[in-house]
Image 1 (spheres, rainbow, N blue to C red):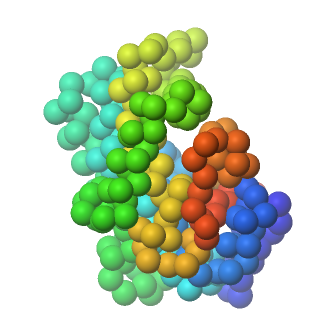
Image 2 (spheres, rainbow, N blue to C red):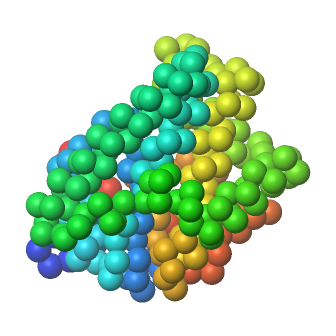
Image 3 (tube, one colour):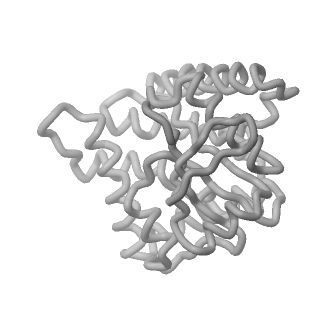
Length: 235
């Protein structure tokens, strides 16, 4: 873990999850920031801080917004599919607007082109291939399936009333959200056509630490990195 600050940008605490991840950070070719639509951590100001650091540190920067897949989480929490999809669309657009405002304040032209949401990814051949592989592996690889379900249970537990734990049906519905995110953790370089890429997020589930430690049967592609990135100063 180290503090990283480019000229004229906020200082960030950066924790690469492996030596290969550290190399991708050092290369500075591409960063993909995960921006969760229903997480109050990602205010416009916070996104601006992350963007300012990323733009100073990397040649290219994108922002991943798992907008449509958020509906799977709401279905698991008891919403009808139509209502879940509506909530996901509405919050997804709100999140896109925050990213656009943050990037616009930094002088980025056409900030919408820097967002990777479901509309952009579902037509991306590399993403589609990785997503299909993840769905297939989830069925066939028990260890991988358990790891995905553990991550999903962790997410759902934070959205349920205190003392409640998600049941099997809820986890099975919501795991589709994690499987929709997974391609960006495995091979962002092929999705965005770069040699190296670092996925940046502030709080990774344990499954990602296992993934980058080589403890699962599926490994990140060469050039794929992950870093826990948080503001270095007081919150």
